[in-house]
Length: 345
Image (tube, rainbow, N blue to C red):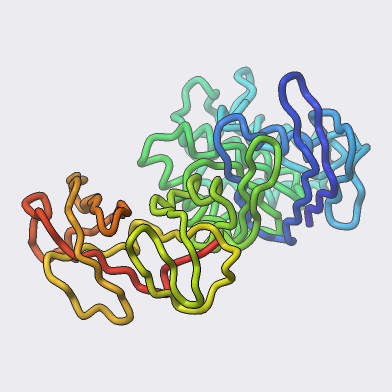
């Protein structure tokens, strides 16, 4: 549905460089990256709001590179909602029909559907100044979708919401995506939002795409040091690979399969690092005796740092797995690494 080829954008003090990206029809796609990486600039380039230096943008089979924003059949929702303050919620919702004419019956049916799904009936006659953050975001989504866009671009749609509203709007986004034929492209820095909503994702850094693919692959199988650190891998070690084993410090760590000796790093997510007081018979794991360095209590889970063979491992352990044991009292323990949870790159 969205195909970007060799896109270059040059702005004062920032550039998008050679962006190649494909988003399938009716996909929910997440674009992730740190502040200043170019996420919003890329959205605005797709929407036709910033000038393109080089490259092409396709929506379906249409080359929209030279088209004005209103001709691209794209909806855009910013994190600050950008509702018109002098218009009611209903007037905001129907505003997009000025640019894309629908048959009256189709427009009425679409409005009723969006009002119902987004639960807007009680606030249709209110002005934005009298809406909560969640109500503003729901109204902004309805306005963007009212014109039946082929693509909906979402710029940090959940970041400004408090936890209660955020969960509500996130559920609504999932429902809207399932009930429409619209392709969703969302910018986010929140990993839980990406994992909950998106099937495919990309990481952007300093105006370049670092990695793209299935969202779980990015989190569990990063292909660069930047991606690994950005997605919270926590445990990334320089390593020497010898067949189906990795040398990290003084440790020889068993892998699930043989690895090319040209790889440089071994990684494992913190939730896949198991710490126990005793050596446990965990299927396929390679336990190492370790020194407990730091334990932090987060209520429902602990983060535990241990040192083994010169390497420091960071673990995220739910309290239910510790069966009432308090690791804050431990001096020594065992770290268990399952070969299937280890990733080399």
